Image (cartoon, rainbow, N blue to C red; front, side, top):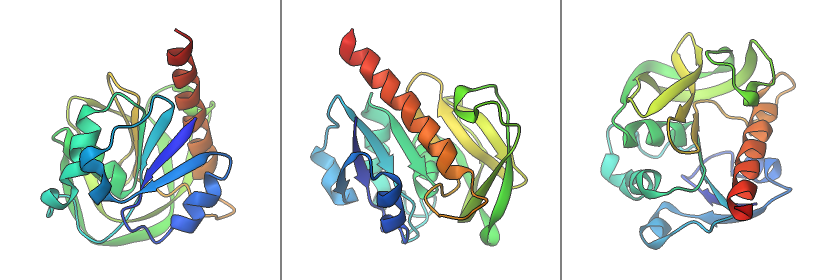
Length: 195
C-alpha cells in the first residue's frame, strides 16, 4: 500500500511523515489534483491546514472536493481534510468562537474494528471549525462535546478525523487509531487486488 498525501500546508507535515514512515509517500499539493488519479494501491490522505476555512473558501478546495466525490480509492481526511470530506457531501460546518487546542475525549458511536474495543479515546484537537450536521452519505463513528470527531462514508472507504493523530503526545490515542484505520484500508486494497 502506498500513500498519496495532499499537503494543505499543515504545520505538522514532518510529524505526519514520521507517522507514515513505513509507507511509500507521494506528497501532492492541492494544485496537483486536477489531473490526479490515485493508483489502485494508494490511500489518499488529506492533511490538516489553516490557510483558508473550507466553508468560507470552497473554491480554494474544489480540486480536493472533486477528488473526494469521484475517487473509489480509500480516503482519510485529517482535521481540515475531515472538513473537506464533510463539505464535499453537503454537510454543515460551524465556526467555533475560538480555536480549540487541547486533549479531548471522544466516544465511539458504533462498534467498529478500528476502535479495537475501546470505549473512549484521548486525542489532540487543533481546529476552529466543527461538523454540526452530517450529510446522509456520512455515518458518525465517534463524537465529542464539540460534535462529530470520526465519520465514514456509507458506501466508500472514506474516513474523516477531526483530530490530529500525528501530534505526538503521551496520551494521544490518535496514532493508534490511525494505524488501525490504515490496516483496514490496506486489507481492503489487498482484497481488491486479489479478486
